[in-house]
Length: 74
Image (cartoon, rainbow, N blue to C red; front, side, top):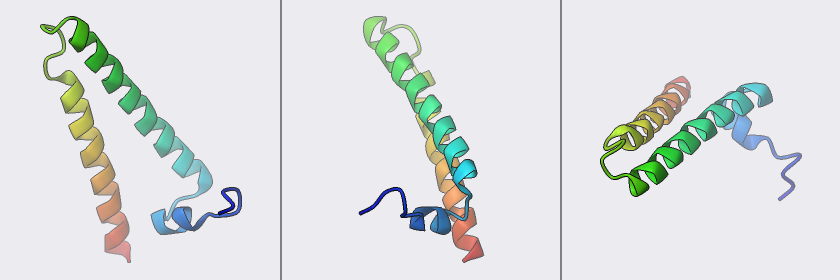
């Protein structure tokens, strides 16, 4: 598979390259934030008891909402 020429995913997502890049970068930073919070929670169990999970739940909901909007258009 040639990754540079395969933009089928962008067509399915109905996004431009830049829109996809922005979304992916945002999702990546949220996941990184949650990861850091989980690490701190592992060291200090009384800290961030729910925050990491809430970030992941919100991230999942955001992605699912985006997918359902795309599927409604199809």
